[in-house]
Amino acid sequence: MLTSKLIIMKRHKKLFISVLFFAGLTLFSCKKWIDVAPKTQIESSRFLSNRQGFVEALTGVYIKMVATNMYGKELSFGFIDVLGSSYTNNGSTAYRTAFSGNYQDQAVMNIITSIYSNTYNAIANINNILEQIDHVDKSIFAAGEYELIKGEALGLRAFLHFDMLRLHTKSYKDGGVNTLGIPYVTTYSGTVTPRSTVKDDITKIIADLNLAEQLLKGELIETGVSSTTVNSTFDARKERFNYYAIKATKARAYLWAQDNVNALKEAEAVIAVAPSRFPFINLSALTAADPNKNRVFTTEHIFGLTAERLQQNITAVLDSSLRTGSLQYMSSTRVNQQYEGIITDIRSQYMIKQVAAQYYYTKLHQPQISRRMPLIKIPEMYYIAAECLSTSNPARAVDYLNIVRRSRGITADLSQTSSTAQILTEIEKEYRKEFPNEGQIFFFHKRQNSNAVIGVSGTNQTLRYVLPLPQQELDFGF
Image (cartoon, helix red, strand yellow):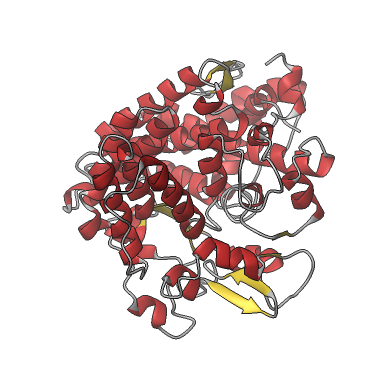
């Protein structure tokens, strides 16, 4: 298990190698760190002295993010989706133990620690980029590249910290605003970063996102005009932390902080460009013969990643052909409850495969669709806008929900006279239909502090919403 202090100490020995070869860091003693720090700081500075070094370093962060201990499994269809009660059968023993709320079990803690340590390692790589980029001659970059690289790095730093905050602290609705948050690490150094309050962490997340937004304003996906030679297509920009990924993450963060005014503002800014930038999937992409079926709805991605090993990663847990006890699947009762028997809903029609009495999600079975892992999709912006308006303008909230429902093949609109409570119930249903395998259902229930969750017997203990920090992080007094 790693601590933020040990993570920071070890960065100097292995960070340079990590950036080049995208390998995870191993734990070394403080003595070894002291011995090698000056040498590797020089190596890192030399590596990040030219354009290609910065491009490769940032690419290394994206590649690290799709490892199995991050968004390539545990923070998408694996651990976090199990906690969100996305399955009737939760797969491995460790997953079943985690679903029961026993986070102190060693196998469960190993998963939690791996997620935490690898996320903070990615943040360390980002901080090194940010510290070096303002110490080089900016003429090494083509027009717009400095802003692009720095803006993406700042945005990713906020994005990763926000997910650690959502995992390891209380939600605002559970009284978490002034409780201890997470270490918000902004320097590449051996200095220990203490934990802030949750409120302070949110402030730092928004500050990084605001600065990133300023830097990325004017990039291709925002203006439609290419101003840089890096990732010069719309599709490529969706696989980077682009301008609208910043706006969407701000919408998430403001909603988490119960700031509905700003959450609505950011969500609607993305919705406004959705038809041209993030259009809803065309039915023809789903009726195409395999292996060309676009089950992951790539046109709707605001931000996603290419996971080269995605097919291998999902095989052991979602592949219905294996029929083993370690697979994650649903019962017919759950499927009917979740999709309400609406057979025209494309999410149930094309995203689920029945084998005997077991139902498997097939969203991520996409061998010819670039192995894309969605991290933010356009429907979420409509859901955020609807939630923000559910009290102040319920009719408009219903309009937003109906837009998504129609795009999914549901012909019966929700009533314009729906109450706030009815709207919130429909939003919950939509999250459960829309986000299996994407890791967002757990965060929805945590933000709501829900004590009634589909698949959880009896009252859902809200203590399950706060994952423990790795023990050695606590050993340093944080």
